[in-house]
Image (cartoon, rainbow, N blue to C red):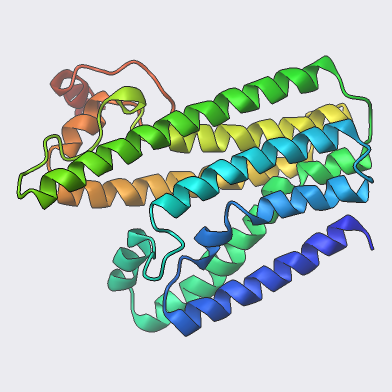
Length: 277
């Protein structure tokens, strides 16, 4: 059986399973729970179909496995796999929609769209499978860049984890934590550095397929493009919740780049410039 057909069968199975589980448990983070696992499986399907003899595909599979292992670990330590570990954003959104509208949203966006996206971001491995050309120095450079982005995301998540651990201790002791959200480390230069590094890694995966095919003109660009669009929407929604909880978040927004790390602005001056635009 062709590896793309195998992947399509996996896609159908995970769509059915995550939708059924969301109905049975009334939790809607089941796609979140397989987010770091299914793309790894897809890439290994293509590497395995090549008999684990294509160096580029094997390298890509190892890199994506490292991505998946890191993300799985971070998701698990935050309680994502525990009962009741639903993403708070789904809870907020469910409160803003009628039950029937949310169920349609659950089926078509949370389940189908996101699962299709997880296949799309892995499909540069299909391009590499179809163009099994020798490994080049550019592949090595891309691997190094991928690992650099993976390191950046690891650092960002660790800084966030430590901040929330300290914040929880302050709250447990009956004290008001200050600051109430993370603004130091990598978060001084980007409000969402982990989002930046996550997207960047999948753009590198896309480039692996381009190197294999010998052209940047690959339809698989739709994967990282849709992923970027998803993160843009997620960022806007997440920040709307943050502003409602923390009035001072607007000041942080005024001086700090939304996603791409950049030098911080000057707070009030940056906000006044933003409002004048």
